[in-house]
Length: 146
Image (cartoon, rainbow, N blue to C red):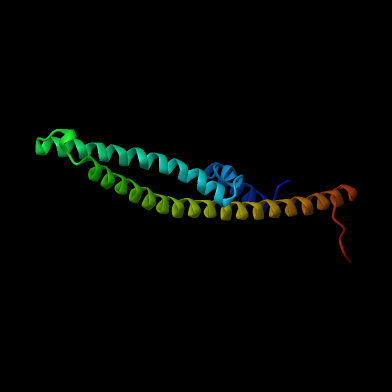
């Protein structure tokens, strides 16, 4: 029969499995690989967002000033837009790196705690199985010391 400590450990393992399913996926990567993969998507989304902002900027500039698009000084405007996009990419890459590395390290720490629980459960099972073998040999009675 299971004792109270085993049930507590198994409950903690079950709660961990329910709440942190993605930790196993993160564990498959090295820290740098996980960060690179996550930042790639961040860069793509930020590029699309910055491009939309640049398009709105040009639309606003042409609509508000009443000039045609080709009447603008396109070279200086495009250089300014390019600098804006590069700065936004660098800022969001830095923020994404910090967030992803922190998330990865938290997942690794949770997995270390889970493995400790698994080892504790294994030790409890190992000691419990040897105890049950002793009971079986003694017909379910424990030897009483005089």
